[in-house]
Amino acid sequence: MEEVEVIQLLRHFRHDLANEVQLISGYLQLEDLQTAKQYSSKLNRNLINQQAFLSMPLPKTIVASLKSAHLSSLNIKFEAVIDQTPTIEDHRLQNDMTTLIDLLNNMSESVGITDALFIFKQYTNEPFELNVYVDQLCADIGYKLNSLFRECMIEELEKGYSIRYIKKDK
Image (cartoon, rainbow, N blue to C red; front, side, top):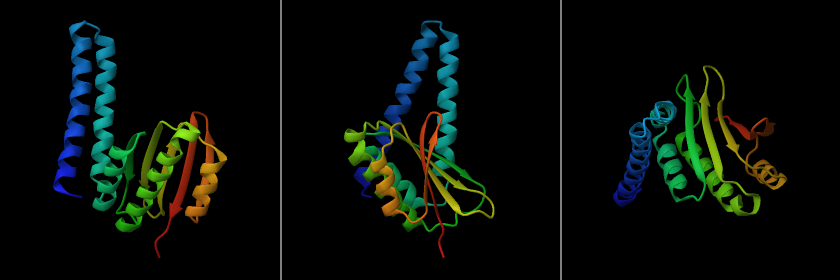
């Protein structure tokens, strides 16, 4: 990633954070403390999630994911639950993330996907797991994921869908 791209990403994140702070400030000026508290709590949760994601020992994956998300038309969020050093190789997950975000972005118009959440999971003595939640799902996404990834489980959830695959490095 070039320096100019890094600066653009940092500007994007600063802009998003400034918007959130401005929103909270507006509610405080209106003396709507309840709504200000809600947005403040939401911002705090988002910052904690971002910190966990950015602290993963997978720098190539982080940079590729952030870049792909920034260039995407989708609203993409990342979370991480890491109990031990990930068992997946950084370059492998980097490629998988780029492929997944490109796939969802390419299908967004036809399927109606607007939001995606990626949760990186590494529990102690377990294989690495990546959960992908989207607001819309169709059989075509499942078919494409099954053809791209060997171990893939698609599960319908109460509030949307989960595309979960487990990658094991040998």
